[in-house]
Image (cartoon, rainbow, N blue to C red; front, side):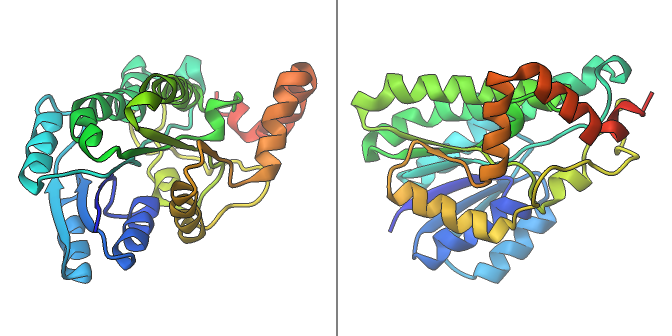
Length: 260
C-alpha cells in the first residue's frame, strides 16, 4: 500500500485521481480548501483516507501539510492538482489576479514539492503535476494562466533532470480542455467570476478517463502525458509557424478579444 497526497482533491480531476488510487488499495491524504467537500469525500471512501482543509497560498499551509505527512510516516506520490484560471484580457486584468493565479498554479506546487522531497527520497517516490497545454502555447484571455502553467512546466522539467539520480520520478500531465469545475470558477479581470463562457478547441476531455490514464502513465514511469493529440499538434504548429498559429487562434478565440 502506498501513500498518495492529492491537492485540490474535493472535486474535479483531483477527486477522480483519488478514486483511482483508492481502488488500488492506496492510502490517501486529500488536501483542499473546501472543508465540507473533503468531509463528504472521506465519508464516501470510508477507509484509508486522511484529509486536511487548507488554502495552499496561506503562509503556514506547506508546514501543515508537511506535519501531516510526518504523522502518516511515509509518502510515495505527490499529486499537484489544485489550480485556478482566469478569463480576461491582460490589459483589463488587475495584477492581483495574475499574482493569485501564479501563487496557486506555480508557487504552491513548487514549495510543496521542495518541502516534501525528503519524504519522497525515502520511498524513491513520484511527483505528478497537472500542467496544461496553455503552458506550451499562447491562448487569448489566459495570460496569467499561460504564464503560471509555463513556469510550472519549466520548473518540474528541470527538477526531473536534477533529481533523477535520487530516484525521484516526475510525471508532467499536459491536458487541454477538461470537464471540471476549474473553468466554471475562472476569475475575471476584477477577481470576480468570469462573465463570459470559455472558448475551446478540439474535444473536451473526461476527467475520469484522464485520471485513469495518469495513473497508468505513472506505473509506466512516463515523463509526460499528452492526453489530447489535437492540442499537442497545435502546440507544435505554434513553434514551427507562429504567425499562422496566432491568426487562427485569434479567429477561434474571438470572443475573448471582444471583452474590452
